[in-house]
Image 1 (cartoon, rainbow, N blue to C red):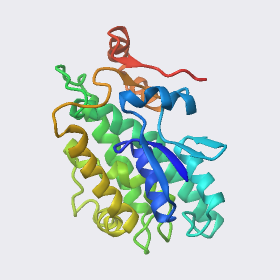
Image 2 (image 1 turned 180 degrees about the horizontal axis):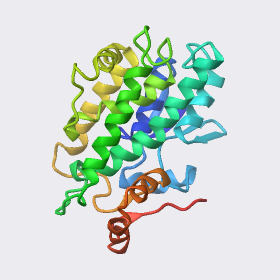
Image 3 (image 1 turned 135 degrees about the vertical axis):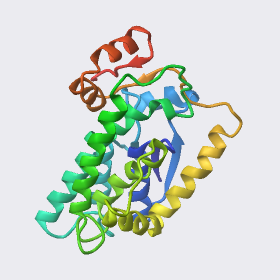
Image 4 (image 1 turned 45 degrees about the vertical axis):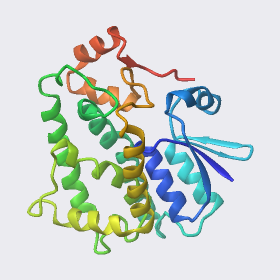
Length: 258
């Protein structure tokens, strides 16, 4: 059986779980970001990042590579459109979700995390910069949704990649208004009706109660691991002094490149 080194709330792990469910593949899940699973995680990924897929002697890291592996291993039903042009579009949106969209949402949301109860406030201008760029991406996504109601003429990896990020906007007080994003609102409703998405939403809600209902978290509650895209977005918007302060106070960790 496939083993997924997982986390209920990671957008990258959620993408992979939805693809596994869409392809009706059985798998065993390990919440590998829980502190008591850390040693087991670094045996399969020294960077201590999820998701990681183990299939017998094969270990695959990085969510996009995992999806490609699953597509090669179990091509039906496919998560890629039929035409080369639409496949390129799907991969472009997956990359944009995995890099730009993830970076912005991560960087502006850490003050809302149930694991990290911070006493400080976001640096001046951070939230405004994030919301401004998120609006630009959402306008592009509004334009990208086609007559099928999906991004690439059918349910594809583009939709599975984007949904975890789009579904996390409401807690950031970013609302999808009908006047601005009518197609995106319909897309959101349509995605929630897909079996793989609906089941994952139920899973996330159930795990949120299980993990945080007691008031104690099984996860790291002070340090944050910062990937390259997330750091790049901060630096590009002039928040290098704030990030340097996070590093000097031991709240920020940069993973090894190995």
